[in-house]
Amino acid sequence: MTQVSVQNLWMEYGDQVVLEQVNFEVETHSFVSIVGPSGCGKSTLLRLLLSQEHATRGEILVDGAPLPLNPDPDRGVVFQKYSVFPHLTALENVVLGLELEQGGLFGRLHGKAKRRAKAEALHHLEGVGLKDSAHKYPASLSGGMQQRLAIAQALIKKPRILLLDEPFGALDPGIRSEVHDLMLRLWWETKMTVFMVTHDLKEAFYLGTRVIALDRTRKREEEKERYGASIIFDTPSEPAPIIQELAAEAETDTETNQNT
Amino acid sequence: MLLPFALLLIAYAVGSEIRLSDNPNDKLLPSFPTLYEAVQRMAFEPDKRTGNYLLWQDTVASLMRLSIGVLVATLMGSIVGIAVGLIPYVNRTMSAFISVLAMIPPLAVLPILFITFGLGELAKIVLIVFGIAPFMMRDIALRVGELPSEQIVKAQTLGASTWHIAWRIVLPQMWPRIIDALRLSLGTAWLFLIAAEAIAAQSGLGYRIFLLRRYLAMDVILPYVAWITFLAVLFDYTLQKFQIIAFPWFAVGRSSE
Image (spheres, rainbow over the protein chains, first blue to last red):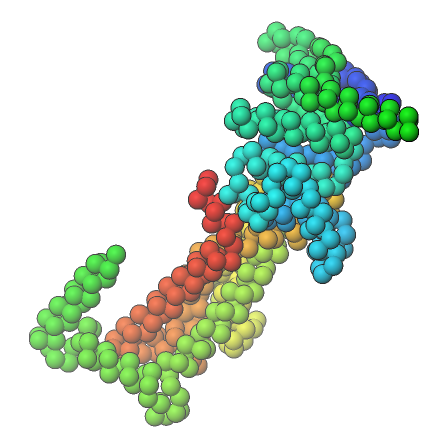
C-alpha cells in the first residue's frame, strides 16, 4: 500500500536548483535509506518531508493528502545533533511529548496524569536501554545514549513516519551497530515508515529495505547552478538478518494461531 | 588572590600617613581610625537631626530603587527578548527599533524623565530600566537565536505550539542566560542609580556621597564606596552561585562544550 508519494518535486533557493524531478512512492512500513554525495540535497529532501521547508514545485502526499504546512507529531525526527533538550533530564525529555499533548496551556501534567506519563516514558526509555540514566541530563550522556534518547523521545508520540538525518554519523563503530539493531527492532515493532539520510553506504544497505541515491546528472561547472539533483538509483535492499528472524518468528506465530 | 587587595590597603595607609604627618587636618586620605569613627557614626548611631541610622536608611532606599528597576528591566528583557528571538514577525518589526532605543544615552534622557515623572522614585526607577532593559532585550534575543533550529523543529514534531515552545523549551533554557545578562547589567544599573540619586533625592547611597562631597567628607565617602562595592560583589556572587545550583544542566553543558 502506498503511503508516501513524492510527485515531481523541485526545490530552488533563489537561482540555485537543489532538487529537480524527484518522484517516488513508498509503501507503509518501509525503511528508506537516502544516500548521495555532500550537497546533493538529501537533507533538503528530508526537510521537505518534515515540512521544515516547502518545495518550489511538486507535491508530497501522505495517504493521498498533502503534507501539513508545519512539522507535526505524525512525523517524528532524530537529527545528528541537538535533538534532545539540554535543560530536561532523559525522563523529562521523553515525558515532554505527552505533556505537550495532554498538559493544556502550560504543557505540564500533575498528579496521577503525570505519574502515568512518567511510567509510559520509562517504558520507552527501557526500550532503548536508558532506564538507569533516566534522571541524568543529556550533557552527561554519551553520544550514543543521546541518540537513543532522541529515538525514545520521538517514538512516544507514535509517529507514522520517522525521519532520521544522519542519526548515527557521530557515533563510534561499536556503539553504532548496537544502535542499528535497536533501531531495526523498534522499526519492526512500531510498523512505522522510516526515511534515513546517511552518507554511509554500508549503513544504508544494512538498515534499509530500499535505497534511494540522489545526485546531479549534469556536473559541468556552468550547469551546476541550474540543474539540481534527482534520483539516479532506486533499489530494494534485503532486510537485515535481525529483521528476517523477526519476520520468520512472526510468520510461525500466525501459522500456529491459524492452526489452533 | 588577596595580594592586590592587601597592596592597595598598604598603599592607602602609607599615603594617608604621609599626608597626615604633613597636615593633621588633611581631609583627602583620612586615617583608618577616622574612617572607623565615621562608619560608627553613620551606621550605628542615630542621626542627631532625624533620628535615623543613615547608612541603613540610604541602603534601603537605594536597594529598593535598584531592585525594582532591575526586576522590571529583567521582566521586559525576557519577554521582549524571547518574542524577538523566537517569532520572525516580531523580529522584523521590533529589532531595528530596539537597536535604536539601545543607542539613546540614558543620562541624556534623565531630564525628560524628571520633567515627566517628577523628582520622586518613579523617575529614578525608569532611568535604571531605560539604562539596562534594551541591553537585556538584545542579549536575550541573541541567546534565543543561538538555540539550534533542530530544537524548535523537534518540539513541533512533539506537538508543541509556538506558545508551548516559548514556555517549555525557550524560557527554561533562557533562565540561566537571563542571570548572565543580569550580572552584566548590574554594574550599569548601579551607575544610573547613583547618577539619578546624585541629581535629585532625599536619601540613598549616591545621594549621601554627593551631598558630603561639598564638605570633602572623605571619611564617609570612602566607606560608602566600599559598601556599594561590597553589595555589588555580593549580588554578583549570589547570582553566580544561584545559577550553578538552580540550573545544574547549564553548568554541565558549559563545561562539556
